[in-house]
Length: 86
Image (cartoon, rainbow, N blue to C red; front, side):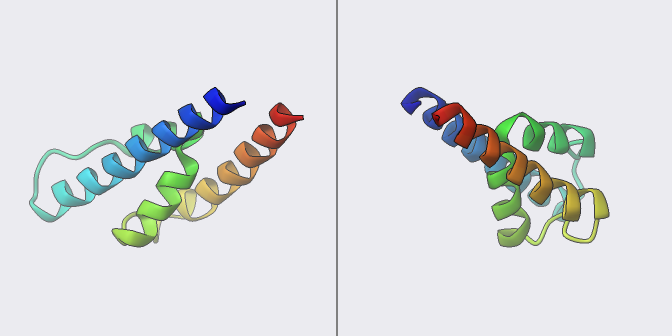
């Protein structure tokens, strides 16, 4: 269980950083990270990092698939962590 939580923490930190990088790129008119990649990071375990990054960086907060999808993924992932811990 400790390994699983550690991996979950790492993917969330990476996801947070990549959302921040994408926001930086958006502000500086640089080549962006695709929405598919951002959603994939959230889907593979980084939903908590994505949700926090969305609020901290005010990034992707108006896109419905992020606004609804990321919190839904977080609930699903927390449920999986709970079941895994049992």
